[in-house]
Amino acid sequence: MTIPEEILMAYVDGELEPVACAEVEAAMRDDPQFEKRVAQHRELRAKIQRAYAPELTEAVPERLLAAARKPVRAAESHVVDLKEARVAIAAKAPSALSRKPPWRPLVSMAASLLIGVGVGFFAWRHSDSIMIQNAGGALVASGPLARGLSDQLAGDRSPASVLAIGLSFVAKSGDYCRTFTISADVSSAGLACRHANRWEIRLLTQPGAVSADGSEYRAASSALAPAIIAAVEEQISGEPLDRNAEIEARKRKWQAATR
Amino acid sequence: MNATGTPENVRDQIAALLPRLRRFARNLARNPHDADDVVQIAVERALMKLDQWRSDARLDSWMFKIVRNAWIDELRSRGRRDRIFLAAEAGEHVGDATLDRESELMSVQSAMARLPEDQRTAVSLVLVEGLPYKEAAEVLDIPIGTLTSRLARGREALQAMLEPPQGTAL
Image (tube, one colour):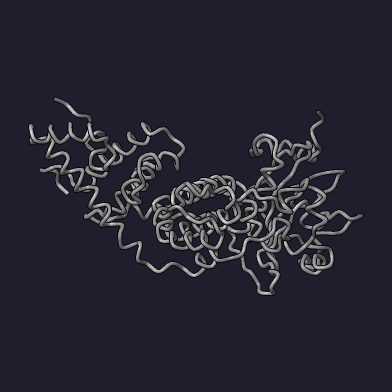
């Protein structure tokens, strides 16, 4: 007589119907090997449960308890810091970030998530070069940022440079877009797209956003990424450019491919 | 688990589930910090869509599923993020190597950590969290037959790691 191992396991797990149970029990009486195997499965099950039981008595971190207690925000609530943006994006809930068409609204929102013009001029000075300018309502890269976006390949970064390019891709609009990080007095990450012979800043995030209640929220570098990732995922057409494709695009001065 | 469906009540029940959600998330993420991040995201997500929870369904199964989906999303976004921020974040996720530095006596947890993801999740839901097969299969969106075969392979692998056959030098 043979009984598949899975049946013996299901017996131990209490998952067998009464008839099948009776068959297993009869087999165990008739043949000690079944009894032995069932005992092994029982032992393993008990061992696993013993090993994991202590984790249930560990203190739960306050932040998790707070998350369970926190009132649910209205869908319209303004995205004020990166952490909320992350949650909102992760949940695919209607939010300022995911609900609206991505381009203009993202720039015009210009709340603490996106650096508005007033803050921007001050924060974006580096070595006396303005990196981002307001050009007729659009934020446009200038100075070292513009040069880096045009010349620097993804992943390349000279030790002196404050700018790193993360990823280049062709957007659904056909424009070339690139993500970047700046490690200056104010570190940030953003997304710029080549349009009308300039680099338009489509998204800008700052790690040290100030939340609505005035307390500073310091996002870890890993928490900073999701807003950018979401924007990339929303806009990307196909796969990111590899190094050769970047070199090609640079040769063509990042002119959108004619379609 | 036939809850009266007031939001406050469900909130309390979710709070009460936190130890189990953390334990499950640790088995997914194999890293307590990631696990707590994922649980937090899952709780926030669950509260945002409480209306989707049918009060005749088990809240623990529903929450396990949200935790698992949050973890899958996290892995996806990491894959993407690693490409986006390759320069900025190089070397941040190097924790997994420690798994291979376990000492001679293998704990159940470290044996679990070595299982392939699909087996680990099945074992975690059924043997650690005690879900019935049917519930576990629903959490994972797989047929029961698939669940039981993952469970069987996972158990055999654990057995082999935790109790090496006689005569095998440790």
